[in-house]
Image 1 (cartoon, rainbow, N blue to C red):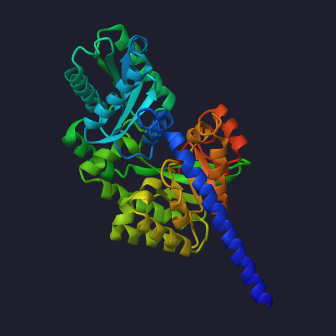
Image 2: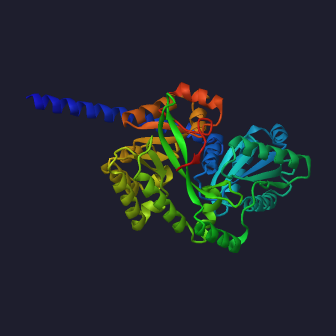
Image 3: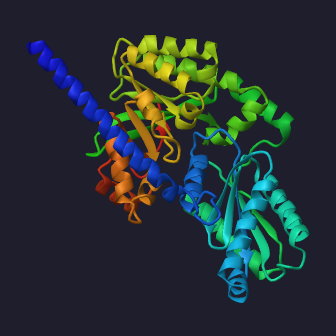
Length: 437
């Protein structure tokens, strides 16, 4: 009888937890469109676009990316002359035209403001600028002289690791102001003045060959803290020592490494280092973000299992992270990896958690923690959307998932996050990546 009462109590509790999750999930779904979609054009809104741009600014990003902004000049006067309805219809047509003519590699087309559209591309900045010129030609072909008083200008810049989002937007604003002062239909591009990288396939090929021969692939570690600023773990980040001796972030070399077939050799070096690190005692657990390659390749999965076997002697010493977009694309594989990690006594996390995608995937994976952009969290709580954040936190609490805010680089951002009572904090303001021995 005592056992029956315990079982009945557990069943009632499980039903209650499920009901709470379903209620909060429904509330979250109802708010997602309000959070991330522009109601007029039905394109992603500014919050969504800038959140995605921050993802490409991450030093773990492995692709070229550019932000292109198209501006409609003198749109306010057009609206006065033709009325709000016709002016709105023009924006809707503009959005449709951009979607119809979007090139391969387009990640997202969104509305940044009343008169600006933003396009994220997996392409070099030169490719973004070329698409802007193609769009100008299509715009003029479609509308002829009907919209001669609403002319376009464009600005594009590369989303390189190490750049800040505010710096990118400042570059765009300056370029648009310069274009506005000149003739119509100008597309201006910001070219990075940073360190010199190899140019052309042959130069990159020779450079990678030297880098691997000299064993210049290494790991840096960035600390992650709890809400009381106690160290909870360190995240490993892949670096290459540049010719000038400074660290080179993965986002600057991995696109060419994959194109030229060097990614496997780089990952082999990372696996070697991780196996060594996993077998040693550290003052805090270590986290490693594994790319999608590890989910689809059986050989790579075997390497991961060997690393887990080494770490098994110290439960909780290794944290395995997988990017959220990988979970959305291949939920079954990610769930399988998460199970293997937990069976080894280690923790599993989701990196780059994206609030736009279905949150129900977390119920399937049941990670120990998720990492979310600090600016995204601030964005959904700074303009009266506190109930949305409350729904998100109720969902994660129901599933016993910690929330770690990442990308904290300003004191004002940290102060806002303290009010949100997140579980973990990560960013250059709290601790920059350092070489890990």
